[in-house]
Amino acid sequence: MDRYAVFGNPIGHSKSPFIHQQFALQTAEPISYEAILAPVEGFADSWQHFINAGGKGANVTMPFKEQAFALAQVRSEGALQAGAVNTLYFNDAGQIVGDNTDGVGLLHDLQRLGVVLAEAKVLIIGAGGATRGIVGPLLKAGVGQIVIANRTQAKAEAIAANFNAKVSAAALTDIPMLPYQFVINATSSGLTGQRPEFDSVHLAHCQLAYDMLYGASPTAFLIWCQQQGVQNTADGLGMLVGQAAAAFALFRGKQPDLAPVLAQLKAQLA
Ligand code: ATR
Image (cartoon, rainbow, N blue to C red; front, side, top):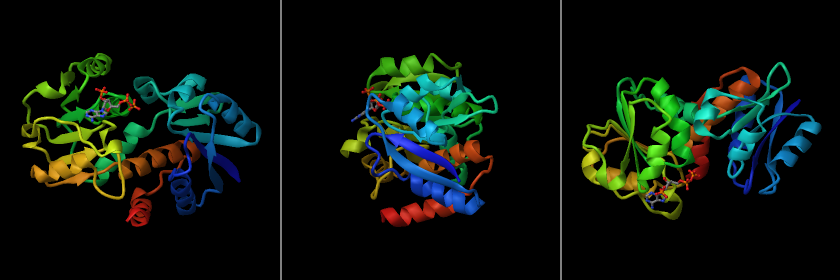
């Protein structure tokens, strides 16, 4: 049985073991998947220990995505764009490959939600690691324009500078007037029950408001969007399952089905 794990600190509440175990059942892949608490400064040692004990690959969550990036010997385009790695595995040459499946996870989830991204105008709120991971995949999916709006404008500009002219940056107080079809909250504001403050006029054409965070109840951002008349809202639980599915495909070469696992997780949260 091949051994996989997720590394984090804290890691106790990680849903990754459950999700990967469900994928393994679905695809009849003989794997085990566990959660490993690594010391904050000790990710590389924990990983090495795991590999010495037969580990084949891993997912990496807070606060180790940058340390995993540093440890990888080969980095995917997604990892390079994000500056962070959430999936480590070995290629045929025995090198450690670092990938980032967060953006692909979001795309999987948007596909599940029936979103048409081609030529869409997308407003991303926030300019931290979450934003860095999704801009490249959204561009690849064919969106027409991305505005990254952040409380601290310079951070949005630093991300936009890595991409083509379809991506621009703004302050939250000075968002360009465009008919945004999709508005994505990539800030961490929901962790403290808050939402990013910006003018609701930018929601006027919004077909779907998406919060990359998730919880038992809707985030403050999604509640506000609903109050402003946005018909469709979704939280990041589907993205969590989507990034796991993309990682599983890298580990095992099989693409699992997201929907049944997402339904199980929703039932657990309710
Ligand atoms: P990470 O890299 O882990 O995603 P981060 O770099 O701290 O975390 O980014 C968090 C993002 O959420 C930032 O864009 C932050 O805005 P600032 O860059 O101005 O700090 C944003 N954020 C957090 N709380 C917010 C709030 N209450 N309103 C608006 N933006 C908020």
